[in-house]
Length: 329
Image (cartoon, rainbow, N blue to C red; front, side, top):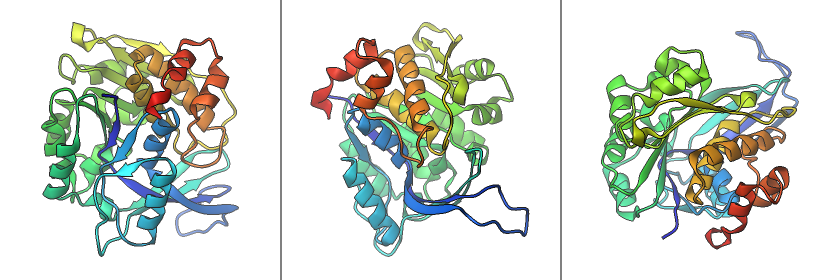
């Protein structure tokens, strides 16, 4: 049975405003462009789907206009929601301010995706199957309406199902006991350098990756610390008791929009693992996928298999792997 990406997180609506700079407190600034699109965990789902991995959305979604937008976007990428729409609630949204240098600043308002019921968690658990890759975001662990049930859900995942955690920007708002309980079940942890520093106190990407790996259980997959243009640091081989970080170089490009780059990296990494790539090759491919994503405007800009292959070259081992994965589309 083929691997699937199961997002046990939040798909919300991104309201994206392009500004020359952030306004001072109490000030205002005119946006040069504005739009709205599905975001949050959608970016991970779309990145994986574009590389041919089946994906399902196991989070909440509302019945209002934002919920309609989310469902249309999921359908457009071939992603199936596992849960029914929550009547009387709309999906939440995030205001993303993108400045002239491509940096992004967020303000998030939660909605139906932030309230997971026991019935929701049970429904999702019953539909999991061996080989699934369950992706969990720290946002869900920080939302009061879902944190407890998501923690229980993650801690009790059956054997044969891999848990992948991206702690996200709100990692400092996750209760330490809750975070440690989830980390005790995590197979793959992927975070950026800021999040890694908040979790370990280490500024160096390699040192942070090794410190995080030491908090995972023996036999877990490992840790990825994303370093933007620097690529990433990978700790693999925890089954052998090792915790040595390897630097996986990035691909320098001219950044147009960094919004969603981390999600593109996570989605590509999991898709390549799901297709059978080893962790080092998956990290290399994820670096390239993220480098493509930041050259485009918008949060969900991960490359397709054809686009990734065009950058890697047809003889690259990852290109060969992706060419043989057509049956997963």
